[in-house]
Image (cartoon, rainbow, N blue to C red; front, side, top):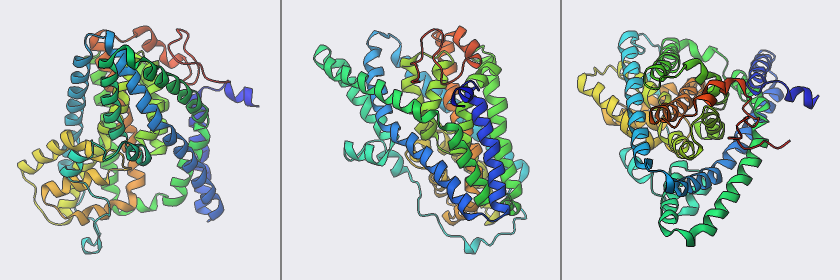
Length: 430
């Protein structure tokens, strides 16, 4: 049975888990099976918890090793700058689409919600969070709290120091290489459970929320999904074809398992190991992918930090009867491009939304109006985030001439959890 299941492509296994999860979720909701809902919640929660458990050591060791490996790479600084520029460009395009859809659909007009009953969420964002959230108060705290952006900062500093120290730091670098291999090996045991985790995550979402919550906010929900779909299936493919001279279908064939997992897990950080494997499978050099993907998982959020805050700000303004001007829309774009790092280490887009609302002077209680449907919106937002985190390194590598185009073209023909024929990917334990 296990060997027969292993012959099924990994992406198909996830799809089967998705379909079965939806069916079980509807069954649990229709028959009011509390025990089934609880079971689905436990299964999905444990899977995401296992993924997140591996993230801190994976990010730290991978970046330290990658930075030290840059000793022989002459264009390392240029790669970093180009990555940041592409992050900004794609975020600007995404927020423009969000603003455009907001002006076109007027998502807050005619919404029958009482704004007086809304309360501000407990978790809010500010520019102080953005500035202070990068540097940890102590290194242990960053790992305990799972703050990936702070871990990236620490790893970059330690890696750069080890690079400058040279030979005396080699035992430390060798230790990190060994730890990285061990973490990767253990992590792919967890990744094999993704179809079961998908079943639990999507099943619990359907059982807990259903679709009836969408009725009062149908226009807003539709706008968010349409905006994310435009970025995911129009903007990214055009950029891949025009800027990278790449076949977009090949990209989706290679990156789809990560996008699927992001949709059901609602966690860019939890999906990061699969995203990195997908990016490497697409032919991006491992040294560069080990930097770009973890960094993107904390700062590259076209769904949560661009499309959604733009639409939500327009929605809140309309509900509270506030007219937005050109300056306000420019502020929304600025916050989306510059402020997304303020969401680092946190789940969902509430922090980014409150940051946007406070910058515009809109009531923070407006965010409370959208909390009920946030899990449903977060699925498509996170899928868009992760797709962007894979698109940018792929485009940069293609433009730099370091992309393995043979691997890119054959990415969809190889299973995610199997070693590549070229030996680029680590073998997966039997």
